[in-house]
Image 1 (spheres, rainbow, N blue to C red):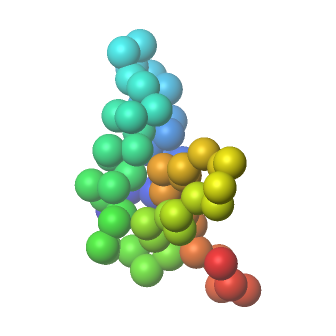
Image 2 (image 1 turned 90 degrees about the horizontal axis):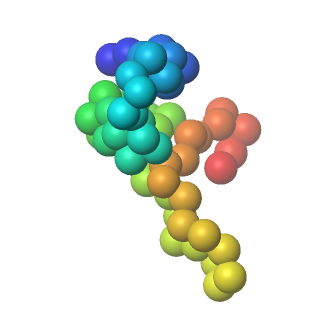
Length: 60
């Protein structure tokens, strides 16, 4: 799959690209295919929900 930064660069070239189209491309390319690309944890009270999470070798 394409890397996260490659996808971001590709999205930045399209004037009608949005954060949602970026998120969709990330999910299509990485969710379930890369062990370091995760669904985010539920937000704590008062926090906004995250769109995706990246796992780090030292812990999440």
